[in-house]
Length: 562
Image 1 (cartoon, rainbow, N blue to C red):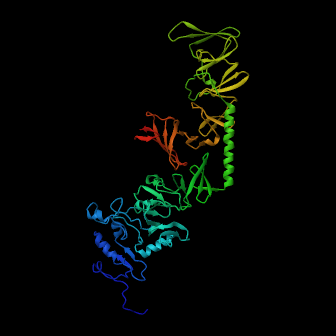
Image 2 (spheres, helix red, strand yellow):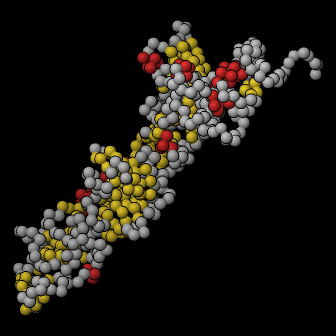
Image 3 (cartoon, rainbow, N blue to C red):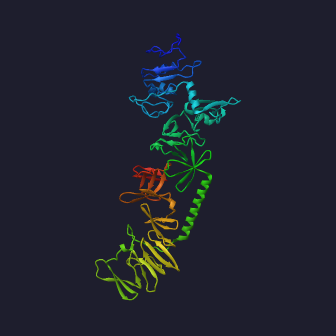
């Protein structure tokens, strides 16, 4: 190689850090620390001057001054520093966390670094020429029209912003500052070109998991997805990312999955536990609860699934109307816990039955601590008591349902052509030649004998495609698809949830659920009151559900909870 007198590398100690006039400097290596912002800017400023043929300046910061002062190109609140309202060490305009803050234009860095941290070498892009390289990587370019107005297109020439701005400034990572006389451009001049969200000041870029976010306050994070559907209300709170984004990001009515970080899906409809999503190009996909991936589907498949669902609902409503009736008489039973078989019940010790003649039974009752026997009447037939009630036949041949001590339930008393108690808390009776079965736990009347089935850890009555939970309940019925049973938890419809523990089943009512479908606010009553107890539940579809009682006041649905 021919030797020349050109200087390629210049090494110095505090000789050329300030006022050195050499605008074609393309490389600066910092090897000395300083606590002076002015000295830092002077040192790196030796390479930030424009020179013909010079594309960029590379700064190799061996002592990590950028961690303390940010990048030379960062915006600083000089007025606040001049007035002494903030420290004079180059704190960036806006919120910062801790003593050190990595500037938003450092590639792929999110964590806060302290002065004693050991870090890998980081490449920092600072010069306007290299900014253009970065803009090219994001695919944006400023264009103009005949009227002298500016707009933005992507790398394929597709319009991102129309030519209606007096001036457009492109910043690193696809951030633009817009100038025009319009009110929105004066009040919110900054825009993230990837998602179209407006900001009142320059946003910084953060990355969490598979997706980038733009933010100005560090609390409201806007996913950087190529879309025209988002606005300033489409943000994710930072605490919502506490459980990570490995299974995708759900916010408002949107979803982004890890395999397609630039594709925004919008919620379309819900069919049982199947949620249907649509992208901006009209592509459809489905996702079951707690699935980590969307599965593509065609419009024909969606129409078929929707029609099948509608037919199931129609059949369900028809069977409810056909098999379920209103039961008028008031029958009160004892609280039942575990005892559902007739053989489990015994007659009270203070009752005596004398058979006078065939079909003539005289019943006597002796009160506690008394020797006198009181007559409770005579009957043609009497049957053993269960659930705190019994069936008897009057001397006129009518069947009656009375208390275990033969007292009428109501006046006037309802009579039946035939009646009998059955296992599983059922009352079977005949009226006007038709048979009926009453589930005594909630007084629901069926026109056909229900079948008792077990799903997971819960018992149900089943008649056709209609299911009802066993035990004291409000008579709510469900289709099989509305019973979502897992190892330790069962969701019934949209409002009820049962959690199984080592000792019992806990029944809650869902008052609120998060967008990710994993966080729930529960109460111990369907219509919560001031005295209601509230709970937080987390369930991800894999691990044991975590239910914790709320300790702090919380305002929800107009009820102040504790």
